[in-house]
Structure formats: structure tokens, C-alpha cells
Figure 1 (tube, one colour):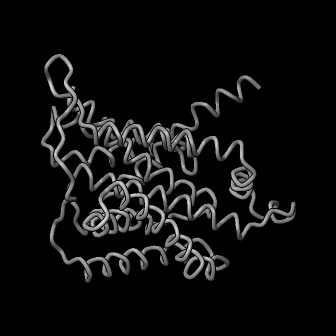
Figure 2 (cartoon, rainbow, N blue to C red; figure 1 turned 90 degrees about the vertical axis):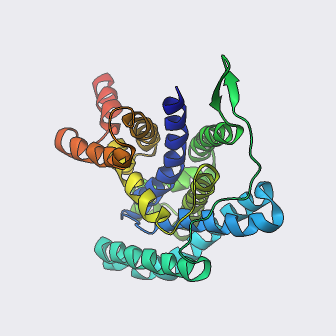
Figure 3 (spheres, rainbow, N blue to C red; figure 1 turned 135 degrees about the vertical axis):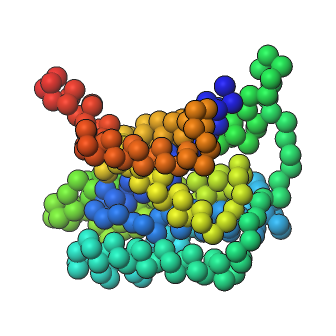
Length: 288
């Protein structure tokens, strides 16, 4: 039971990171490797602010800061080279990843850190510890964030503009949608999701400079499994990968758990390249 619970918690963090990654992939049509370092920024900014403000204030501030930093990075580095093609954007994101990681390393050092937060007792079920309040908060926050994003994309004017730009950038411009402002919203929301995932990574684990690199690999796995650019497919894939990684330690050594994510990539690319999104896409076509 512990593995299932922690698998759901792990999947919730992957979900938050992968949803933001999928948003920029869908809207900008390139793989943003630097997204993993936005998680790192969220985690380390919270680590610093937590010393003075406490986690309840430090976390939201960090998430907002990462959101604005994401917009600034887009405007300063990605937008100027957007017309040069996806390969230039990809290599720019790789360069930014090393730059951000290097800056964090120069400021914080290479030590492993942990948040200074109170120890809490796990909730008991049948006399056995099941889930801690921190872990429960992560799951609830992930579910609420996913539902909130769905409502935002479907019901709000800005959300509809984001969906339109993601479907057809040029047509959106012709129809009068402010694509520049819409892209700013995409990067802000995606970076906020990354920041939130980074905060939660620090809540249940330790912080180190490799966090961003580790997370982007798992996020890529969830994105491939869910279907490239399919936000809802990625949500489901994140939970599947989280559960699989944690349940795998029952039969294989724990240091192989990350390899499970790459197994998913290989299987999906060989059998169902469109990922989980193809399941409901084909169903809708049959109904039509």
C-alpha cells in the first residue's frame, strides 16, 4: 500500500511538471529542455525564502517568481530565434539549461539540501501509517491544478486563445488573436506549474543540482506516453509512470526505478507512437 500511495504522490509531481512542458510543446512546437531547470529554480528559491518566510508564504512567492522568470526567458531568448526553426530553439533550450544550472550551482553550491519544515505524523489506516499531510497536500494540489487548468482552457477567453494558438498559430493571428500576449500567458502558466512541481519535489525529497536533469527525463517519458502535445494524455501518463516507478521497487532494485520511465518510451515508440491520446482520438472517430 505504501508503494501505491507514494506512486500516486510521485505521479502528481510528474503531472505538474509534464503539463507545463506539454503546454509549451503544443503552443511553441519545440521540446523545451530548460523546463526541468524551472523546477530546479522553484525548489531552490523556495529553499531560500523558507528560511525567512515559512513554506506557506515562500512556496506561492517562488511559484510566481518562476512564472515571471519563464516569461522573461521566453521574451529574451526564445522569441528572438523563433523564426529560425525548432532545432535552433531546441539547442537554445539546452544552452539555457546549462546556464541556469550553473548559476544555481554558483549561488547554492553542490551540496544536498532539505527544506526546514516541521515533521508531521502520517494518517493511520487500520493502525498503519498511510500518507502524510504533506503527501496528501501534493495530491490534492495536483488534482485541483489539473481541474483548474481544464476549466481555464475551456471556459475563459484567454484559455480559448491559448488553445487556438496551439492548434494553428498563423490562423490565430489572422483571426485577430494577440499571439504575443497569448504566448506570454502560456509561458507564465507552464513555468508556474514547473515551479510548483519543484516545490513539491523539495517537500518530499532532497534538493541537488541534478534535480532538473532528472525531472526533465521523467517528464519527457510522460509526454511521449501521453502523446506529444496532449495535455490530458500527459496527465494520465504521469500517474501511470509514477505508480510504475514506485511499484517496480517490489521486484527490482530501487536504483533501477528511473529506468522504468525509459522502458515506457521504448514501448510506446515501438507499439503506439501517438501515445495514450490515440485511444480516445480513435474512439471519437468511430462515434463520428
